[in-house]
Length: 151
Image (cartoon, rainbow, N blue to C red; front, side, top):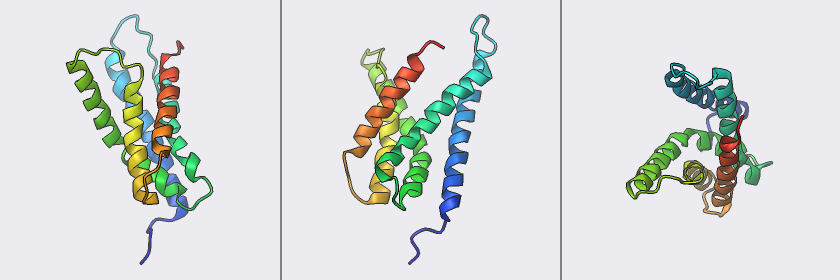
């Protein structure tokens, strides 16, 4: 039985396209409501740069599988499951807000990245390892620092 119907190069191409689409979609989603606000100083280019960094930061999932033939599969599945991570992150934020906790200090970034990292690693490598937790912690820290920096 054939393990994968997609070629190696096509998986990388799909991953790049999805990463760019996520960044562009997020930039548009945030820019459209913000452009009517006076004194907000939001530019589409600035938002696109911000979300490009956050989108390509998801590629850290490749660190434990670099050099193996499974790297494009892990990356592509990670990017395919980003909506599940977004949903989990929103549910997490709603839960915390309902409990009266207003400041999360980037914990939502951890939840957002852990779900795709865990699902991709478990599905492709067929084992559970501490790597998704560590990668999600690194992603959360870097994303929080990137988002907190005053540009």
